[in-house]
Image (cartoon, helix red, strand yellow):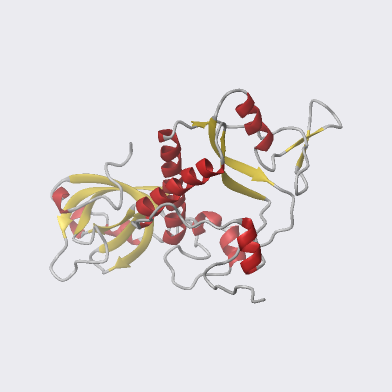
Length: 297
C-alpha cells in the first residue's frame, strides 16, 4: 500500500505520528512562506501544509486542482483559530516532509467542489470528474450499502445468489430485445436478457427453491422517466410458497432497509391493498397514496 491512511481517517489520536496520504488536490492556498492544500479522496479531506522547514514550498506552489499526489508528513494540531469544525479532520493538519507527484492534471472544465455546476452534457463528457463530487459518491456508497444489506438479509433466509447468463436466445417480452451478432455462428444473434425470468424458473425446477440475483436487464425502449435501456433489479424467486409468504418476506426486507439505512422503525405487516380496491378507489393499479385523489362516484 502506498498510503498508511485515507484523507478522512486521521484524528487527534494520530498527532505526532508520521503518515502517508494519497489523493487529489481539492484546493490550494499560497501564503508566501507556506502552501496549504486540501487533499481529497472518497473518504474525506485533510489539510496538508508545505512549510519552510520542508524545503518544498516552491514545489508545492506549482500544484494545481485535481493533481494527484503522495505526501509523507507528521500529523500536527492546527494552530488556534484555524480549526475547521465542518471537517472530521478539521482539528489537525499534516506537515509535509516528502512529496511525490503521481499525476499532473490539465486545467479541468469544472472541479468537483465548485458550487455552480455546468450542464449535464459536460458533466457526462467528463464523467470521471463528476463522479468525484461528494453527492455522486454518497449515492454510489448508499447503493453499495443497500445491495450488501439485501444480500445479507436473503442469505439469512437461506437464499442462494446465482448469476444467470447475459447472452441467450431471444424470448420477446414486453419490449424489444437488444441483439448481439455472433462471430462464430455467422448470421445468428444472441439477445441480452430483459429479465432472468426463464433462467430462474429453470432453477426452481432444478430444486433451487430460494434464489436471488442483483440482475442487469436490457430493454430496447425509448428513454423515458420510467423506461431505461439498461437497469438493475433485485430478482427473487421462491418455490412452495403462496402470495402471503412473498409479501411477508418483502415486508421484512423493507423493515430492515428502513432501519439500517434511515434509522426508521416500520411496523409490520405493511399496509396492503388488493387490485380490486386500488382500481375501484383510484382507477390505477399503482396509486400514489400521498395525494389521495380517490374516485368519487
